[in-house]
Length: 458
Image (cartoon, rainbow, N blue to C red; front, side, top):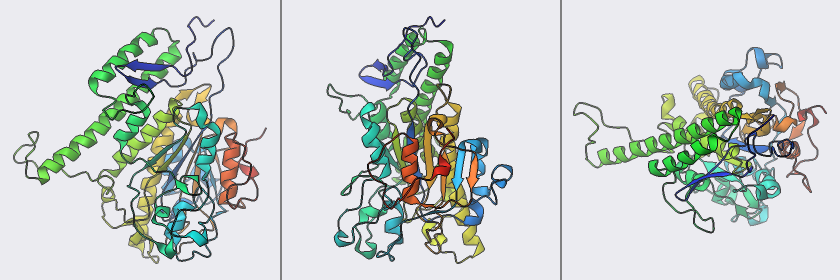
């Protein structure tokens, strides 16, 4: 018999004006013998531009998917049974914008719709799939949706006369309203866990400084005594994660500050006279890009774990001059995709693809390690990684690369590679929304059907 007192599902830890939402605990909902509610389904999207090296990405066969996965998805091997890959998902036909592949690859990725040809100089496209879900479930959470990006959304280019915002936005609240993404992890912390005023507005201060966080953790110790052992472990893991994210953000900020001082000729007191100067961590230019992306991924995990939001997007990079010094070369991603089968350039594109998938794997593997309900956090998520081009060399869109991770609360049949799916981008998005329990009044973009192979039996 459960002797522990039930707690409210929306319970918060509070201290000095700081609030930390709790993860979903088994104790939430146990009252008068009523079992807890089924955990909600969350949906997240993570993007990389310019397509993939197809031989390095697609499994050779459904059997090889598990036995010998291609190099690009090796980091997903521990959870391939919880992933789904499908070949045969075509993108939105580009006419009359055939000269604007990079303006279209991100803007059409979640809308499955072309921009309006008669109003090219201003935003006019369609509501995106993430915002369709946010409209459906956003009223149940503190944040209707969470939009993240590695790079500022400030690129200026107008392929085929299209508005520059099409290059760097994937989320659209309405056909004319792109949703800006947050690139500063500290600001994301403020949105998720920040100090708020009486009407809920975030006050721009450090929400997790040591003194404030210690007060909150003091409340956690009191709460912990009232919880069952399994919930105590969940709470401990969650608070450790919050601490870890704060430390990593602080470390990035400290390195940036030291590098700026070194650049201005001020020697760091932490560095000996014979030590090399600190590298300048230019986020999002490329140095330590993995660390930055992993912090953003952890923030996404925390937002889902605490049910602060059930919808997220993360634009890992955009098609405008990103480099990856961490991989041992400084060539721009875009320039290498026009490789014309030159092997060294192909190798670099494959390495960049693997790097980006590795960050996605970091996030979903962490979700798979977190218990929730009768399973894990990943069991209750639908996470999609992908690109708006199949092949950056030829700008093809016949077989867009997608990886789905998570079972969506049991709605998605995972652990498979489907080599001959017949469908388009809109079909996929419409199907994933259905798996998340979202009823749409019309198909997403160019959709004509649902892809029934995705659904779990029963």
